[in-house]
Length: 417
Image 1 (tube, rainbow, N blue to C red):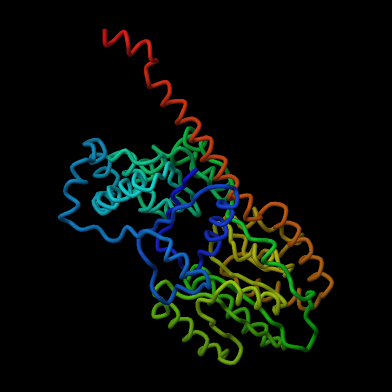
Image 2: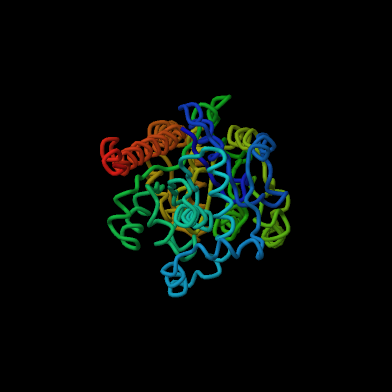
């Protein structure tokens, strides 16, 4: 079974879970062909495996207007009408020529199914490749609210053989927005973590009163990730006499020349220059080392579809403090395997971290429960298996349909006579 695996701007700083899934799909017996729209900014290419991933990936590149004209002519009139009414004409035009190239690439490489790990333009390219150029069957994964991935969702999902969504909350949104028939073709399965890789190499040592409290956060530098609020929480902890130190792994979407500057200014305003460290985009080994050294993992996102970084910390038996926003509550049960606080509330975040700092036994209990939770329900192998099984089922259904479409030999003989 040969699967095309398409991720926008691959390999980016947050794409380690894709790499894990690719490895597991191959272990299951799939032959995986990597595809992407284009490379990410250079500052976001940070992993030890990035070079191998780039060498394996076919990049569709930006569309060229002259080359787009034949592809645009293949789009049915009803789709043009839908795009005008739905406000995605520009997306349709931009995706037409990459879709033609994608279909040709899949045909040349014998790719029988394409999985688009996005519901943005990558999904539209997959849909147009199938609809307009006889491309392979395809599927999509929804990683966040539909509104985050632009218009034209009905077109993207209509031709999909199946979809995966990372939370029950998102499945309900798909049903409400696109109808029960589409939701019925979806399975809830989150991207997971390699629980054999993300494991402690030293026993967890809880915080000691009076000693430095090491807090670790890992997420791209973006306002919605709540790094500014987490910094404010650190300032509150320091004001209460707690020697808090915060390391943040992640870079902004512009490769370090965007939102990072605003965070650096906020660090200076709060007087935290010697307490908050922006690490930039780092590889998986560095993330693991920081988690092994930390007392607490904290993330103050305004909203979070689910959170692979939470899973990584939990897999390392590290007590986590997160926000009750988006789908996080489907991963973390407050007081049982982590602590949840309201989003955009530095005071609540500071109180939760201070509570853990004052209760070493509670830290140990949360860490043990967190490790068990992730190992049981969020291992990366589960997500790969869900895609593998669905692709195999799609291949079987397509083969049955093809056999029904071919007349039996005796009918052909009669027709010739």
